[in-house]
Length: 255
Image (cartoon, rainbow, N blue to C red; front, side, top):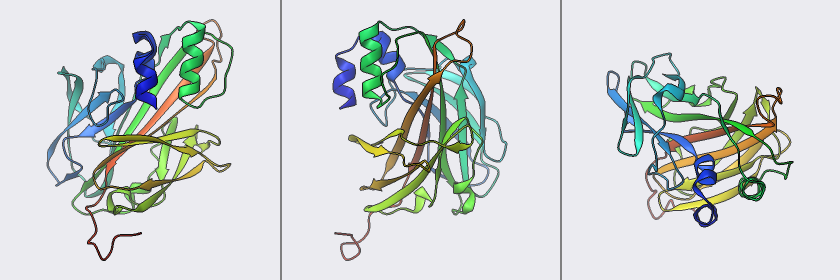
């Protein structure tokens, strides 16, 4: 399991392997709310294990174009504020400026194995992370399926916020606007974490949603860096966070 492996590795590895994701103060809001959006960094979902320098956070906004303001590092997370101006299903999103990291060969190999990537020649890596969180302002609408144009992102085929425990969430993973096949997808919920599987040839995967509450979907992919004078590899991390609907009654619960 991810946490067990990370505890055995030095901090340099852990700093890279941490997932970055967005946690709104609430996933259901009203028009005009001043909503705190927290940037979490870590593997202990839904908590955060470290801050992110606000100067590295780029294009932080809602899907209607409203920007985040007043980013601050407080406690173990970085927090911004945004006003919800549009009804429906909207996304909060941002990405991080690329950052370089060099690991020793055995640590690099362990990192690749953990994240389900094929073994490649050891080298310097640049990494950037792309995060989105689904917020329902008023009532849900088709905005949940909007492609934000991030370099890497999950596109849900059904509204994650309306899922009941026992439902399944079909997703498509896009990388540079095209389906990404063979990517290892992981899910986390309060008190749990597991590997779901790998995306098919069309970049699709179905994620079981067993419980009510907050969820994170995560993946990472790597490719050779186009400028070897800068780095050997570049990796791109994607996360999707949401809160699904409450539990069904006993008579409605799926077997």
